[in-house]
Every structure is written in structure tokens, then in C-alpha cells.
Image (cartoon, rainbow, N blue to C red):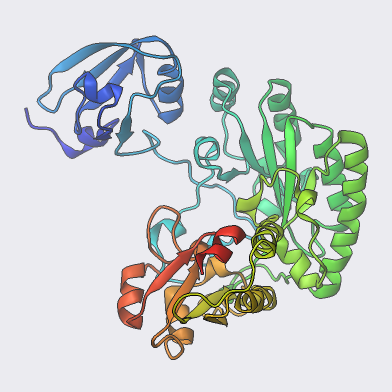
Length: 441
């Protein structure tokens, strides 16, 4: 039987893990999942919940068109060991907002194709931690989230003022957020929130209101991460906005301290946390590591610096100065905003490990513009242009966040292997772990 490409990709099995349940019962790559316990599987969320059980009935269509009904006996939480061609088993929901601050709208040409797609999908929030605005969610999906207890959900809030949120997201449905979040909270759905803060727009009194109203939904709303707006040089035709100046960042941090004190007294948690950039822009010392409680917002850039420095210093204090081993020379790449901190850590390393030399190179972001100062938005072309004359005979150290999380590819679609070949030098990828960073040398 001829299998057309459309059919082959719908619920199509791409890979079966060796020695898994699926492997043992004869499921193979190319098979198509039709139903579980007689229920058609419309997406990955339904799949995850339908396979939960000790006895399930799986209907598979083989590549030749035969249908196999397979009885599976397993532990309740055991996975079948199937990876699908389309991880969602359906299309991702496209964002229907036109946010004033959208970073995707500020992307230049020549990047990875996936970086131009704006998703706004609660399934990706549950599966991958993506943030969603909840503006394109229909009643059927709301009921399904509650029925299947799809939790946690990461919510892009920005403000709880309905009129202001409509203005910021340019979507008339954006003002319906709080009633929906309350409905989720009442159903036991956990949420984490993010606010992209814009000077003169959703800060000040607006921010106080947002924090207060979200705190009323605690503990269902677990925490709030506040990050500064990111503005690239590619803003033709977009709203006129400006990033945080030192005085504005300092004023925000003062305001944040007061809100954290209130939340700590009332909720037993600081509840709301600032992205690391605010402290760097304001030239403020970072809070102690325990300030960040369980460090559950690292992906939002909240607490990464404190955690890294704390881990590094702990490892350093345990180490006595040594000159053992052959001399090694390194070039360490960082974003411009972290130049001072990484420079200080490099000096400590060289004082402890006398056989190494580390040159810290803060790469200026020409691709997005110099206002983008974090390492996670550096491209291979900028790194190459600014380190190529410095790395001869040395090892290049790159932070892991310059690469795609599941593939060794930079934002501008150059592979790590291509950069290695162009530089003709060894490249080591350093994870965001201060202990590992110190002990690598």
C-alpha cells in the first residue's frame, strides 16, 4: 500500500527507544498511532494522559496499512518509549498578538528559521516551559487544561491592567487575563508569571498593581520574573521605546525590595524577582544566592549570576594555589554586560591555578546592536570577527547559551563545527555552572 507523505507524518513514529515497551511489543519507526483505549490522539497532551495507566490498548497502523491492536501491561507512569515526527502531534498555535516589545519582530534576516515563528501555545508551555499570553485560548482548550490538569503553565502577564494589556499586546482579548488565571487557580493549575518591564509604560504604580493582584492568586501563582525590555537596532516601523537607564533600573530595584518585603511577610516567599540585567545596569550588588530561594527562574535570566558566582567562589575557597600541569592559554567569550564580573573571576582563577592564562573578550553585538549585551544573543559571525586575531594557539571558551539548546548551532545558523574550522582552534562549551567552570582548568 502506498503511503502519502501527509498520512505518514500524522501521529507518525519517528523513533522507538531500544528495549522500551514500544520496542518489545513491535512498534516501529514509520508506524502511525491511531488511538489509545479507543480514544483518538489529537496531540501530545492527550497522548501523555492516555498512556497513564497499568493496562492500555494501543491501536497502531503499520506502514503497509495493517492495523495492530496491542494490549500493554506496564507500571502506571511508565512511558512507551516513542518519539514522534511532530512532537506536538499537531500544529503549534501561532501568536495572534502584535506586542509593542516583541523580540521576534526585531530579528534581522539570516537567522535560524525557527526564530521567526511566534508560538503562543499552552502545550508548549507545559512541555517546554514556553511563556504564553492566553489570548488565543478557546473554551474547549481551557476545559481540557483543567480536565487533564495541564500544569504548570508559564504566563506572559506584563500587566494586570486590562486596558494597558490590550495596548501592550495590541489584542482586544488581552484584557481578559485575570478572570482566566483565577479560574485556573481555583482548579489547582499552577502558574509562573513573567513581566517584560518597559520604562514609562508598565512600571511604577502599574507594576505595584500587577504584583498585588497576582499575589492574591498565590500559591497557584508560584512566582513572577521581571525582565527588562530588549531592544535591537532592527526597529524600523516599530513603536518608539527605550531601554532602562541606570537611574531607572535603580528606581525599579528599590521598588522591588519593598514588594518583596511585603510578599515575604504575607506569603512566606519573596514571590517576585528581577532579571540579572537590572542589577548590572543599575550597578547594584547582586543579592545573596539564598535570596533566589529555589532558583526556579534561571531560564528567565533570574539569579544566574548569583548562582554562578556562588558556585565558583565555593570551589575556589576549597582550592590551594597550584602550578601543576602544562601551561594553557584560553580566550573566554562573554557579553559586554558581564565583562567586569567575568574579568574578576578570571583573575581569581589565574591566582589559584598558576599555569593558565585567561583573556576575557566581551564581544560587542553587531548583529542585533550594541544595546543587546547578554551572551545568549551573540552570533557566530560576531564572535569570529572579534576573537579571530586573539585565539591562535589558544583554546576558545564559549558559554553554552550561545548555542541552540538541542543542537550545536548559533543564532545566525552557523554550526559550531563551522566556527571551529574558520578559527582553526579548539572550542570548549562551558555550562552555566560556576563549580564546573572553576574545576575545568
